[in-house]
Length: 322
Ligand code: AQP
Image (cartoon, rainbow, N blue to C red):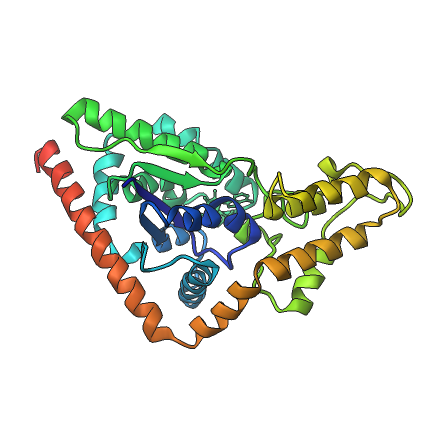
């Protein structure tokens, strides 16, 4: 059985982009893969400075993931902070990492452009991410398009390490869900937890409607024909429903024909979200009321991840001469 690893940052409530590109892949893969999914709490320190906010975000992301359908019977689900060996592994990998590999990371540049502070943690975050990945010897790393470069950096670093010290790390494959590009947020930029443009499917219905109605569109009138490909509402709808879903084709047709205002398309998106996430929204309320269960899930996941990380780190330490 192939082993899978991926992570999610607790930098804010999970959104439709996280779900459509990443979490849905994890749920599909649970049936026939050995799964390791973690909440990247060390990574979130690069953007979250308030301890209470960090704790709340971690708790919320854990509950959201379980509500979406990450099944602890099939997935080792854990917090990064409960597997401290990854920080040791990050140091060993960092000592092999040429500076130019970090200089070319586009996510760092994007975050600076958005006004985040250029901390060393943010700059070297792909090294810690490489350690997270390599710590469980996975075969496959499923991620969204924006994480492609980071997984490539992981492969690169592991290859450099192996070339210097022998075959310590397994080189994992990258997996991007077919047809899932980057999902735009309400302002048309990449939907992101920390950019204030995200749509969380767990918002109260009224608040959800308010966010959806804020999605930016052009000013075409009801009767005019519209291009779905350039419309953020349509792109979000397609990202969630799926490229080959008949509802996507039907909505595209209504755009092209004219006679449908953007308000109607937004209402269709609201209904799609409420339908798709109905069971998850119910499950989330149950999970919020069962902290004991959530803690036990995380403990069990961390035990499995620690066992793997200890083996891999011992291999790496021995190889470098420690
Ligand atoms: N807009 C998006 N479209 C498609 N996939 C996305 N992902 C994130 N945003 C989009 C994918 O979701 C997974 C979890 O992401 P992450 O939490 O590890 O970090 P991220 O990519 O940095 O996500 P955000 O929401 O943009 O968070 P912040 O604001 O903290 O940077 C990943 O597989 C990612 O590809």
